[in-house]
Length: 333
Ligand code: HMG
Ligand code: MG
Image 1: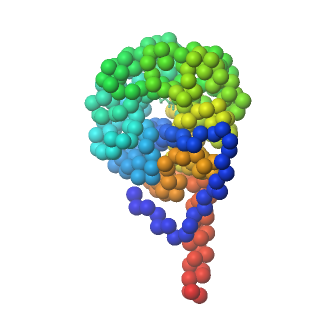
Image 2: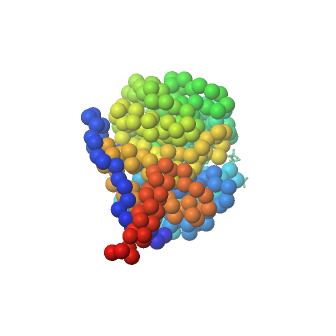
Image 3: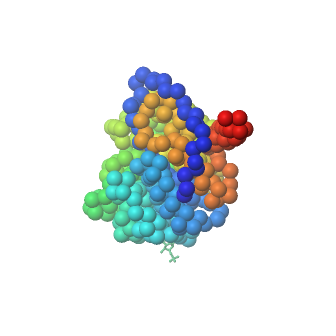
């Protein structure tokens, strides 16, 4: 993509540090995977590759690129091999992919993934909808993937979906989340990502689930939060996570994405909204907010849809305003 010419200084938040928050966090970008997996139209492989490269150019270093799932289930990501083998990212970038089973792991390892994410659900209904099987059987599938990946020397991350509510089953007891999280840790995943797949969590709920998981002896440093913004709570929930010691947050450039098998799920937390807040808190992410926003504007144009990130919309409006004012003023200068 061609960077948008910076015709004006675009706004940034003033920095106010809050006591007891980390100095740096990892922003875990899921846009190319979670962002594109439910798109009604299949995005061309070249666009996906350019998206990944542009994200890295904007400072993203934790990048989930695609999924090695069944193309019958997720045709949008059937080009996973092509994306991985052609994208050519620096080795320093964490290049994570999803693999649900041994077949997926084999494809992923052949394609040069540097980390494998397995995904299971805290609830039975979503395990059936998303993986076609029970929680217990999907944990057994994940165990095969984690064992294979570990013996190949490739680290793993374990997602738990529906940690805060399920569209079919309703409330989810934090104890059920902790049970699944503990099993993933026992089988050897390096880190966990707790998913609010349908975006229903509120801040004290975040603490309750984190407490239940940490009570099993799992260090909070190994836990990430994967928040969806369905009810506009994602950033508040990030802040709750920060105060509990979480230092990795999943997000999607421009707020794209959702799980195609989760009824009622809408967009992920937008990376720009997350980075604006972290920048304002003086928390280092390594990401250039304005470069990232340009990437999301470009991608939204490619996909012919409006941007759902409040920060991208505000930055775009400020830029348009500045350009208009400049051109109005320029003849008198
Ligand atoms: P199944 O239909 O029960 O399994 O699917 P199967 O073994 O009968 O396979 C069906 C077909 O897929 C067969 O092909 C297999 O060979 C093939 P056919 O013989 O019919 O031509 N197949 C594969 N092909 C390529 N790669 C593979 C693979 N596996 C099977 N790895 C399965 C079971 C697990 C495969 C399926 O349920 C699946 O792929 N599910 C993935 C669904 C998915 O990707 N969901 C979105 C990701 S999770 C998410 O978004 C949530 C998250 O963001 C966190 C949050 O928000 O909570 C992570
Ligand atoms: Mg998700």
